[in-house]
Image (cartoon, rainbow, N blue to C red; front, side, top):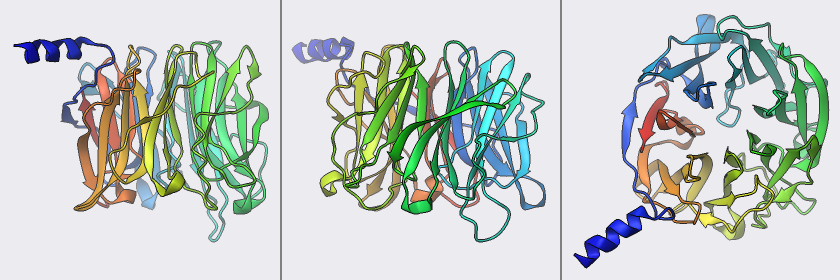
Length: 388
């Protein structure tokens, strides 16, 4: 009886760990679909976007909204473009309000041998009819412009965060921001950081105080730790390292941070291999990303990273990541971590090859916490599940 009472008390504590249950969730993506992403409709409903095969061996960017336990008919944003098919270059479809949708994606030139990448945007007033794609940056040189993320602030100003490598792979890479109007046209452009990791994705969220951007920084000594920069009252803060992992690597890990917010509650989950110990960690902030607590270990073994994080209303984090399996394929795992640092039991969602699992994405909504990932087998459709 004493043990039962203790168990019930621990389960009631806000800092106690959770054990997740998972259930498969069908989705409307087609066979050979890839590069799934999540966003929220104005009412909080999940919006899933993805790329899928279209006519004449091309691809289309499509999306669907989950409402009332069913998916809406998929809509096509754009088709026939030269989408960059890489797990780290994930398109995004956002419903910024009831009358404004925005999408962004990365393209490569049609000609062979070019390593250039360009960021494009399109907008819609109804989510059905989309404007002609516009390049989202002033620079047109054949270098990499990509690894983008998007958010709108409380006043509705739309920010596209992206990277440019003006001198190619040898760097440096700049962290950039393009401010867009409702038609997708560029209003202004600014540089936020003049030396960042050249091929790690950006992530941006709106907090209770403004925007917060998480990205992998870089120093002349090749230290590549995760930084956060904030936009508050119209001014950008100085970049701040979330935790000094001191990961020194003369290469690009293509593996950055994920950030989530609920008001002033913020969580950043990321991969590091500092001291030859590959792992995924998470750190929490209660002041909109001004300061972070000590990191909590998320992974349980040799991690490959590709972390994604979502927060529920009380600040509990749901984290997904890829991890090595000593017995065979790579595993996709998910677990909760409370703001107090209590980690729940990891649950396996899938297994397969690292590239075919893609860059899994997790999302919290009134419909539940949802995860999307590559099937794990070439040519098969995106998989989704609900965890609770």
